[in-house]
Length: 366
Image (cartoon, rainbow, N blue to C red; front, side, top):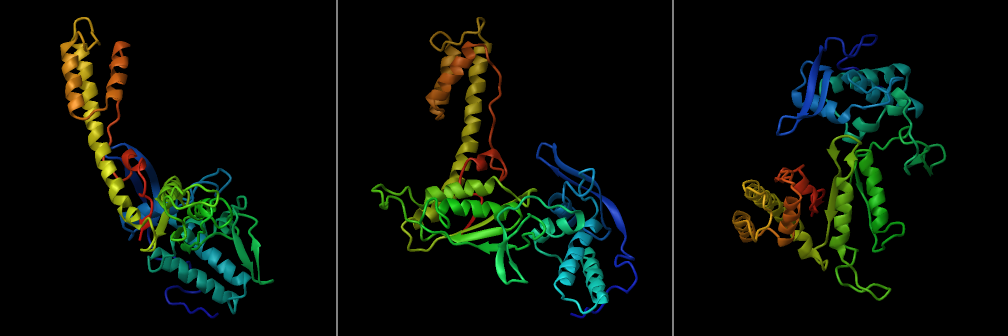
């Protein structure tokens, strides 16, 4: 290939004329506590705060780029890592007519990345150039590639020398529990894809529905029980090893026996979140009132038979639907003199614990 220059000049720094400034990227919780902070992130002055945050929080390599096990802090490191690696691959495979064409390719891409005129997909930002720029390898993770010299599929010998730069995968799944190509094997394949920042989707219509017969004489627990497992597995993985959630698509044909349960899945789980959030407040209120009833008693009486205030507090709690088993636990704590208001409340925040307890929240269903 011959590469023409449009934005750069031969023999000059491709970033000449672009001013780089230090910026801060920060993630805070609703209570103001800082979850993540990166100071002195060097980026082009024209970049928005959103662009700074995406680069610093998601795409910077956090560790292993130097002898001090440090991470990337300058956007120019990333531009070189990407454009330099792309040039290296092109030269290795004979894509460029001359060395000057290869240099023009590198310079033009470096400039366009800095000016936000082009951008690769997330797996490229995550993985490309880590081996080229920093010598990062890592043990093989089960990836394969086509050897251009032999035209055969071979196993990768490391995680980053031939990285996973592809954005999306479509994977099949058979109606088999543990063998290759089956349900549990799919979760392993999905984990490999999520780990390096890519997304995956599958059509699960081949999986039998609930109560359908099994070859051993039993009955299937159904598609939905397996989708719940895959959903939890996806939610446990930070895509690309950073802060991005796994990208997962679940598809089901309309004629599948479990289609109604599938369509209602997210709706049902969303209602659970609302109930958990509301219920947690009622439970905390009940515990607080029971504590006050005992604390206000002269003898710290924790027996509802003799403490009328405690008895009334428990009656109100039961009316509100607080489970009797929980109230029994509260009485045991009060009898031991434990008045710690340590019960956690839940809310409907998308990244809160309430959502984490329900299913169907980590995939796009269609």
